[in-house]
Length: 416
Image (cartoon, rainbow, N blue to C red; front, side, top):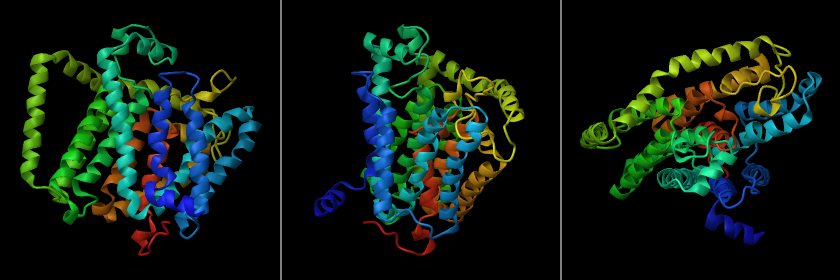
């Protein structure tokens, strides 16, 4: 046991390495498509759960803790009415591993304590790596990567022009766009080192700016409408908090940043105006995209197994494609949650989220990063299913757990 304790003290908790290890798994698919990143993520989630239980981090000390466990249990029980509606058990298992299993990260966030900077650093580095790798592959467009993208259905035609419509890296444009915007928020953590001015240094601020810039470029190049909108909102949110609300940095840096952004826009207008037009057209098409999806959402809601308990976990997900009478919601994670969990389950989810938001707003200096992560996830879950992805759900639930951490309640977290 001593050797495990020594490893923990030197390298930190396993959940800190989750994103780096899963992104590494996705990267290995460039070498062989036999590598299964989803399986790697599933195994890691099992190990993280065991670690949290062994460390006594999974508790029922607070009402929200109990509600989280009830939420997990409710979704497990939903297999009963999922099966009653004619869905196979495999649909439930597949959906559970990607959308409900990651809820255990709530307890990681709640007990992270002084390891918070290490977790955010590793998460941001994983996103930066995926982004830089994607940029390199996007620019160079090697034939092996074009074939790889076609085999994974990232693109519909195996040529460089089609591959460059959206940057996919190794995780796909939807996830890449989400990770980019989430990485902007975790990068902002290092601008003020969690709001503690006395620890702020020029070197740390420079690192944070690099993180935010790379993550922003990553999100924009994914060419996802939801990501483009979220990038703009995150930039406004970060600047307002850092320079005006919390005053973590001197306002002169705000004017330098604004001048730099204007200069970049001018250069793009001169050198590559079609890129700006492409972004504008994507943003302009957003209202039409919502109206297109609304028909799919209405059809799914009108054909629920039960309004109160829903269809059961996975009934409206991608794994239900091809099953008779299944109403798959391809784009709309929140509507999908409502259809699968019904009024009861979705109300519990909303209560947990709204409670975290209320608590975070009460101490925004300490929780601005977590509030941003929650907002980023929910905003992008309106038009996509990111909340049901193994690379998106963990950071979302971690943020909720962090806001509900015992430190905020006046206790010291048990952080072995």
